[in-house]
Image 1 (spheres, rainbow over the protein chains, first blue to last red):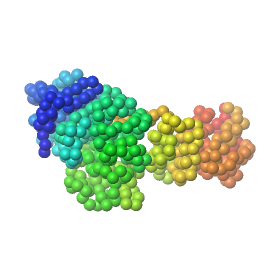
Image 2: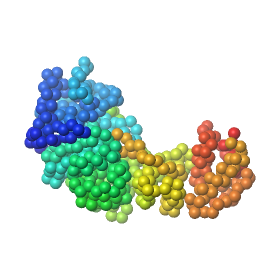
Image 3: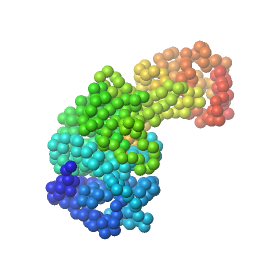
Image 4: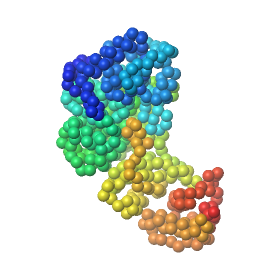
Length: 433
Length: 81
C-alpha cells in the first residue's frame, strides 16, 4: 500500500492545497499532522472526532493515520457527537480553529477499531454513521489509475467529511496531484475556480454538474482532462451536455456509496452500465447481481458496519443490498432510482429519477426535481420543479413541458403539477433533496 | 369563494388539463358528472383537478378523510365557503 506521508512530503514546498485564498504545502500538512499526533499521543487518544470542515486539518489527520492508527470520526454537529459517543466513546474533538478538546469519558475501542466513521448523505432520512477500515478506503482510491492522474489539479466539490471527498483527497495525495476548493460553494465560484486555477480533474454529483453548466453559460474549459460524476444516477442528457461542454475531457461516472465503497466506473459516455458486468467478477473480487429489481454488490471495500446501530443492509450470503432499483434495457443495466423514494400513484409505482431524466430531455429544461404530492384520490401524484434555460419563456415552456409529458409518459408518471423555479435546493453532499 | 365561482374554477382547470392532453375544451354545468363519460377525463385527471382546487382555494376538505363526490356541484360545495 502506498504511503500518504511520503506522497505529501514528496511535494515538499509545492502548494498542495488551495482553499479559498489560503495555500498549504505538502510539508506544512505533515508538520501540522505531527504536531497533532504529539498532542494525541501525550493524551493517549485513540478516537478523535473532527468537526472541522477545514481541508487542511482533515489532511493533517489523514497524514498521521499510518504512523499511529486512529479511529477518525468525521462529522460536525451534535448528532455526530452523540452517535460517535454511543458507538465507542470519544477521546478528543478537533475544533475548526485547530485546537483539541480532550473528553473526560474515554473511548473503549476494541482491537481493530481503527479507520474512519463518516456519515451517509442522509438524502432519504437521518444520516447513518458508517464505519470503514483504512484499507477499504485506500483500496477504493488506489484502484484508480494513479498514473493517469499524475499531476492532476482537482476541484473539490464535495463537502470534506463525505466518502466522495475522501476518495478525491486520497487519489490526489497518492497520485502527486493537488486540490483546489473555492471559499464559496455556489456554481459561479466553481466555474471561476475551474477557469482561474486551470483545474484538470473534477468529480461531483450530476446535480452539481447541471448547475455548473447553467452557470458556465457556454464558456469552454480547455484545461479539463477528466469529469467524474457520482453520488446519484446520471441520465443520458446530462452526459451528452457535459460531452459538448468538455469535448477534451474524459467522462466517467462512478458507482460508489458510503456503504459499498467505490464499486465501478463507466467511461463509455452512456448512462447505466454494461449488462455483461452482471454475475461475473468485474475487478478486485467485485461482483454484481440483481435481486427483486435491486442491485446487490459483493465487495471487500464495503463498510464494516453501521456504527449508528441500524441493521446492516447485507444479505445472508454477504452481498450488500444497495437499495438502487435497476432494470435491463438492451445491452445496458439502467438505474431507475432508489427503492425508498418510489412514488405510489394509485398503486402504480413511479421512480422520480426516471421522470427527472425524462424532463431533462426537454430542450429547455436544465434541471428537474420530482417529488410526491399527497392526493385524497390517488394516494400520491407526481409533482415536478424545473429550472429552465435562461433564454426560455416560462409560461410557454411550462405548457409545452406538460404536453411533452402527456405525449410521451404513461398517465400515472406524468407530473400533475409543474412549476418553474430559479434553482433546485441541494443537500450539503451536492444531491437533490 | 362561492359555489358558482368554484364551478367556474373547475371548468377553467378542467380545460387546462384537457389542453395538456391535446383534447378540446368542454363546458360543464353544476350537475355534470365528473367521471363516467360526460367529459373525457380519467381518475388521474380528476385527482389533478382536486389538486388545482386545493392550490387555488387554499382549502383541504379531505384533510380528515375522503369525502365522496360525483358532480361538479358536489365538488364545488366542498371547496366553497
